[in-house]
Image 1 (cartoon, rainbow, N blue to C red):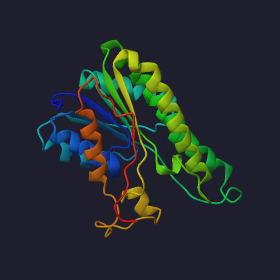
Image 2: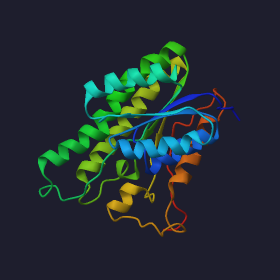
Image 3: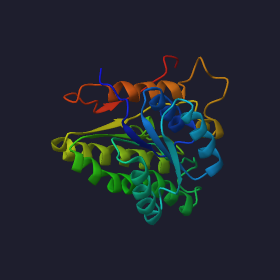
Image 4: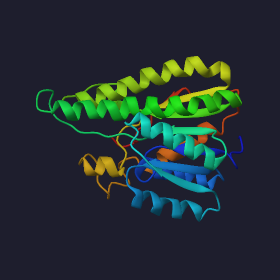
Length: 239
């Protein structure tokens, strides 16, 4: 199992939910972490929790769907961290509604955040990983990116796109010793899924928890460099 201590990681959407659980799991492994998001108060609170593990933790407030903000912020993060080894593209939004009922602006924003946001962040970080000839990129899709359902057209379209983009990138950068993993979890009791009403806070025994997701990411990172977790689907044992 590869030692991850002193690695540097950037986690988008790292202030709460899946991103926060991943940040905490990384901190326990001795990884220095930069988390991003749009709510400074939440990010500050999470950084305080991460620092308790004795690692370097910083935050940056920006919207992944805004390329100019991404360019400026990623450059600043890497300057502060000193380098970057791991990127977790976790930031995303969701909304449900029928094809005709959902406003065009909302449909577009889901695509802009979930697809273009991941593209923008990866585009800015990738040159650093290529220069080091090593790195890991974990892209968070969803089972909604494997199968469409009624009233999920925008979200499913974004997550299908994430899979295609992620798999194409994986084949491009293998020669650079960069591992790209696409994750397609089913429902997890994250802040977002609770807010959307598809999970509840008291569903600990029946629905996947953010910590389960984080454990999978750490396990993939600990594989020897010769091995790569190309994709993984995380499901609850309870139907």
